[in-house]
Image 1: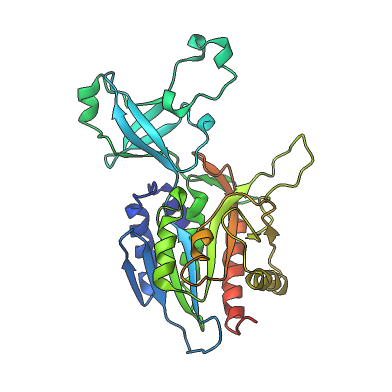
Image 2: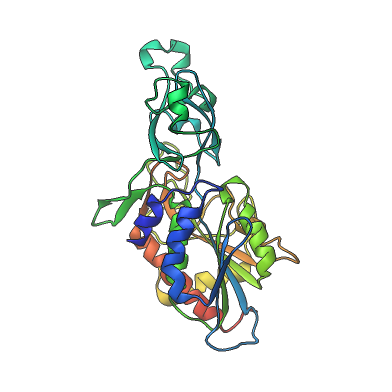
Length: 345
């Protein structure tokens, strides 16, 4: 399964090679040209079936390859590893998690003192990341240096798998944004009367960096950004609407902290969903940011919109998503691109 391969791949921001190789293997037969730029973005072009002078004719579709993770910053005398976070990670989810370190995929566990040795006034507080260490089983600094080095990337050790066949719920890591990458791969299997520029971007989790240079290079007329987004639909004490809900379809963003969506593109997606009887929802929080934040500011500006697959527990070692939401996201974007062939007002 494509999503499984992408989820299991290791690709912390700045180290997306493994993910890019999987994607390139999948899309070679469906694109006309591709190149890898200086930041590692995989930029692909799919020529239109028929030439069109209608606007927009050059459409960028972006999904980022990188995931949150850690990086080794030092090796202690006892053989444990100091680390820092790469991307937005809540310190509370780190303790006791299994990880893989460096290209050798050295297994390790993020450790701290057992509860018996923690003072009572500390037990109700989240342990800060700089007080934790990664234990790879090394007995001292020298033996640890034989396995890892400062600067090695660290990814969470999480295997993709099915949880419930009826609801088609699956678990895995990095659904933000391997789900978007998988959607984009499926879209490239079709042809359109549009010039499609597929951008599998790097370093989104550390500041939308890959998208910034990719959009400058492509200079598109319009852009769609594919994401895995916040899903917080579990019961709450306070009666508030969830940001998104699992199984309710792709989530359309009208605004987040990085951009305001182009309302024509939002309307295109909503109209298409109603026309095709595809379930959809809005992302009901002005929170987070996506590659659209960089893309919409490229050159003279790019009309942009973000569509996401809802994912529970994003930016954590394991997330959940519904394959039905994934399939509906593919269907919605494919139909929207066909409708876009007629142009926008």
